Image (tube, rainbow, N blue to C red; front, top):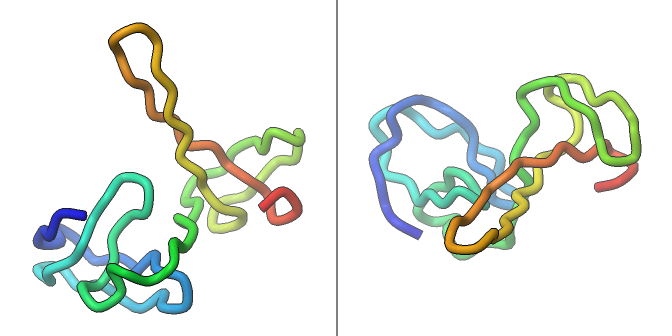
Amino acid sequence: MPTIVANRAGTCTAAGCGGRILKGEYVEYSAATGTRHLVCASADQGRRPNLKAGMCRCGAQVAPREGTLVLKESKRGASFRKEWLVQCSRCA
């Protein structure tokens, strides 16, 4: 994961941390796992929080700040596609 400077405040996505990340802090970032503190970079993968309402694949409506997001990557020919899927608490 590359080390970057956080452009805005947020939360650490490492499992067991969930601590606050401040603007200007050095963090590890990847699209699949999100932002993490430097000391949390080797921790187990946590789940990204769901900040928008959406529909789970089981058909349940998921409200903002509930459920989790999962990154689905697929390849069609020479192009890659990344899609964030919402999962309700039952499916996660």
